[in-house]
Every structure is written in C-alpha cells, then in structure tokens.
Amino acid sequence: MDQILLVIGGTPISALHAFVAAGALALVLLVALLWQNAGAARRRALEAAAAAERQRELDDKVAAMNQIQAEMTGRMQALAEIFGARQADLARLLSERLDSVRAATTQSLGEFQNRHAETLGRLNERLAVIDAAQADLKGLTSEVLSFKAVLADKQARGAYGQGRMEAIIRDALPAKAYRFQATLTNRARPDCVIDLPGDDRPLVIDAKFPLEGFAALRAATGDEARAAAEKRVRADLGAHIRDIADKYLLPGETQDIALLFVPSEGIYAELSERFEDVVQKAHRARVIIVSPSLLMMAVQVALSIVRDAAVREQARLIQSEIGRLVEDVRRLAERAGKLEQHFRQAQEDVAGITISADKVVRRGDRIEQLDFGGAEETAPIAAPQGVEAGAATALPFRRPAG
View: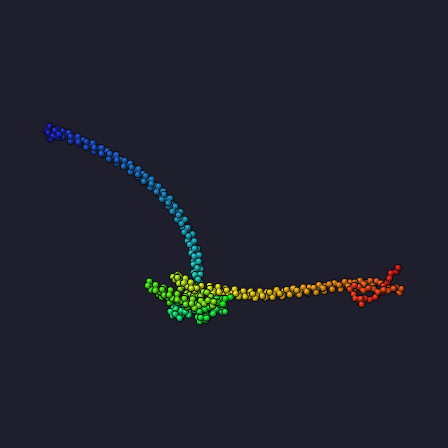
C-alpha cells in the first residue's frame, strides 16, 4: 500500500494516497449526485404544483368559456329571432322598393322612349339641315373655286373690286350723290366720284388695286422669293399711287384727296402691317387707302354731309314758310281787331236801342194813367231821347191847376 506510484511536484504518491483520493472523489461525486437528485425532485414538485395550478386555471377558464358559450348561444338565438323578424321586414321593404323601382323604371323607360323618339325626330331634322348645309357647302366650294379663278385673272380681279365698291356706294348713298365712270376734263375716267353738297369738286374713288404682288407674296416659299414679292408690291403700289395722283387730283376740279379701294380686309391688314412705308407714301401723295369697312365709314360721312345739306335746304324752306305763316297770322290779328271794333260798336248800338225801348215803355205806362177831360188843355209831349223829331206824336195831357 506504501508503494509509490508516481511523483507529482516532488511529492511521492503511493497507492494508499491514490485510494484515499479516489474515495474522496467518489464521495464528492455521490454528494453531488444526491444534491442533483434533490434539486430534480424539488423541481419536479414545483413543476407538479405549477401544472396543478395551470390545470385549475384551465378548468376555471373552461368553465368560464362554457358559461360564455351558453350566453353566446342565448344571444345567438335572440339574434336569430331578431334577424328573422328583420329579414321578413327587409324582404317586405325590398319587395315594396322593387315594386316602386319597377314602376319608376317603367315610367322612365316610357319617358325615355318618348324622348328618344323626339330626339330621333330632331336628329332627322338636323340631318336634313346638315344635308342641305352640305349641299350649300358644295355650292360654296364651287363658288370659291370660281372666285379663285376670277382672282387669277387681272381683268376679273379689277371687275371684282369695282363690283364690291359699287355695291357699297349704291347701298349707302342716294343715286344723285355719285357717278360711276365719270369723265374729267383731262379725259380720265375714275371708277366712281361722289358729289358733295355745297362743293362742285367731287371725291374720286379708284378700285383698280394691284393684287399681283400680294398673290406672289402669298405663294412665296423662300426668303428670296418673299423679298422679291415684297419689292414687287412696293413697286406696283407706288406706280399706281402716282398714277392716281396725276390723273385724279385736279386742282379746282376734284377734291384734294382721292380714295384707293382695297377689296379685301385681309390684304388691307397685311398692307398696314408690313408695308407701312407704302401707306405713308400714299398719304403724302394725298391718296387714302381704304378697305371695305373704311369705305363704308367714308360713305357714311358723305351721307351725313348730304343729309345735313338736305336738312339745311329744307330748313330754309321751312323758315320761308314760317315767315309767310307769321305774316298771315299778323293780317289775321289785324282783321280780328277790326271785327272786334265792329262788334263793340254794334254792342253800343244795341245798348242804346234797349234804353230807348225802356223809355218808350215808361211813356206808354204814363199815358195810360192820364185822365182826358173837355176843359183840359192839351200840350205836345216831347219826343223821347233817341227818337227822331218827325216820329214824335203830340199827346194831350192834363195840366195841373194853379
């Protein structure tokens, strides 16, 4: 037992020492095992108690759930009864609503059919109008094409401008206020002259506006072509303005200005916008470029002048007639004064006759009261005033005694 088995750190270890150490180790392991078993038993007891507590709580919860389930069952039955009653009410209400909706739908469908029929009728009418408008549009298209053909020819363009100008003049002025193609002293024949009242010099209107340059300007696609067309417009208009100034502005014979008629508002707008220098040149030459609307305004001004002259002429006639009327009234007043004098004299004469008649009546009353006797002396009675002496009659009367 004292046999040394090994040496550790200089200490010899014998078999006894090893046996004692093994026994101590085994004792320690046994104590640890017992401690572990006691802890496991304690844990198992705690787990059993916890399980019992959980089981008790689970039983309580199951009982509560059973009670809640019973209450839910009662409530579900009550809800089922309520839902049954409500379902019957809902079915009845839905039936009533469906009946009302069916009736309203039937009425709406009837009204819709009536409106649909009316709409179809109006649509057919509109289609007929559209067909007529389409036919008119076709005719207008042909007219536009013919108008384009007219504008393509120089003489036709001149006739078109002349026609528009003449239509405006005829619609606004009386026939005696204008003349077409009148001849001036220099053998020139303007398209129209307007005779203004109170002035022997007529206003000249020219309708031969050069449109070739504007046609080339609208047909131009490049800058060079556009510049060439603008140059042509300026040249054509400048030459035409000089021609008007030379032929139609005659001192003492025509007005100091002349009108150059442009037959298109669009051309006039383009002329005013892009060729202001040409317009200013025309103004300096006393040539006024006018569009159809401006010509209407100028014609209205001329019409106002004509009307004012006619009014002044009629005013002079009215004034003359009023003078004659005043003279007649004066003579009537004089004659009425004379007639009044005659009436006053006649009234005085009638008053005198009335007085004389009253005196005659009083004399007669006195005569009737006289007492005629044999010894009575008679004496003539003087004639009343206003009665002629030859007409007086000597009447006897009683002279009082003494």
